[in-house]
Image 1 (cartoon, one colour):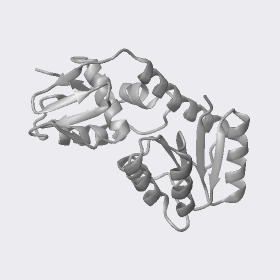
Image 2 (cartoon, one colour):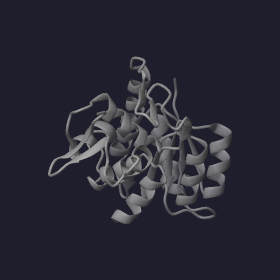
Image 3 (cartoon, one colour):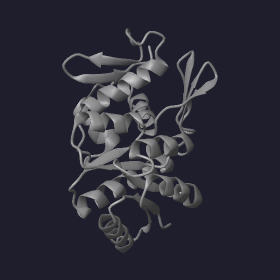
Length: 229
């Protein structure tokens, strides 16, 4: 099945280069020059992945990411000329799956795209998983849902992937670097703070007292562990 990728980039030369390069790699690639066109093309074409520039005319990449994430779980890779931690955290908070700082190589970008698709295929091909009952919270691994008091909780896709990984490995302690590799991928160039941010979100939804977590516990000097008891 040919995957469709939407390239949202206002710099025409870069946008056309990316579209051409992705087509050569076997993808179906579409371009959008600004935020408003991005939303229109996204809704019309329903792409499998979005490459999204942070700095855009009409609507910013931040606004586009927020709108897309409210409507779809399709992976989003942010393209940014900035390398500051604040920009990275903002993208992650909005639900972006990865980010690439300009200038980047087409080889690196293609590797990240394929890694995201590969992880999605592995997750969908895995054996059926039971519903994990934690009392007031239930984790539906097969349906990629978190239910609290019977009501669905809106979790960012990467946050649920982290939760699912920890749940499938109860009692095992993982370092932040290990979690980055297992959940975000070996080629992810992010910082370990990314893991802490996602754990913070998960605790806010899972724990009755996030300040004294019962399920996702910190192992001082090492990382995190999921415990059911």
